[in-house]
Length: 281
Image (cartoon, rainbow, N blue to C red; front, side, top):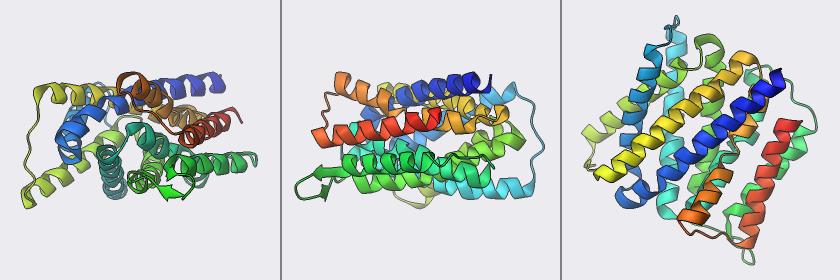
C-alpha cells in the first residue's frame, strides 16, 4: 500500500510542478526574475491561505517558526537563482539541473527524517550528479560551463535543503502549514527588499495570469509532496517529484522551440533515469 501511495503522490507532484515551472518561463523572459518572483509569491501565499482555511491549524512552537524563517531565506535564494538562470538562458537547461535536488534530498531525508537508504542509492546519486555536470557544460570540447549553469546549481543545492525541511515539518504540522509559513516569510522578505531598493513593480496582465496559474499548480503539488511524510513514503515521492524536468523538457521543445546539445540531452536523461531509479530501489 505504501508503495502505491508513494508513486501516486510522486507522479502527481511531478506533473503539477513540471507544468508550474514551464508556465513561468515567458513571464521571466518578459519582465525579469524579480518581478516574477514577487508576484509568484503573492499568488502562492493566497493559494496556500485558501487551502489552509479548510485545514485545522496545528500548534506551532517558536522553535519551529525560527527554523522555518531560516529556511525561507534559503528557499527564496533558490527561487531567485532559478529564475535568474532562466532569464539568462534556456529553461530546458536550468530545470534539469535545479530539479536534480532529489539526489541530495535523499541524503538529507536519511539524516533528518530517519529514513533508511539502501547502499545501491549511492551510485545512483553519483549518476544524477554526473548528469547534472553534463547538462551544465555548453562546450564539451573545452569543458566550458553554460552561463545559466552556476545559478542553476545554486538553486539545486538550496532547493534540496528547503524541500527536505518542508517534509520534516510536515510530519508535525501537516502538509499545508509549513509551506504556508515559508511562503509568508518569503513574501515579507520580498516586501522588505522592495521598500529598501529601487526595484519597480510592473506586470503585464497576461503574464500575471500565467504566474497565478503557475502558483496554483505549485501549491497543489507542494501539498501532495508534503503529504508523503504522513504516509512514511517520502523516499519514494521525493525522487519522483524531482523528475518534473521531464515535463519541462517536453514543453520547452514543443512550445518554446528550445533544443539541447547531444551531451546535455544525455546528461538530462542520465539525471532523470537516476532519479526514477532511486524511487524504485
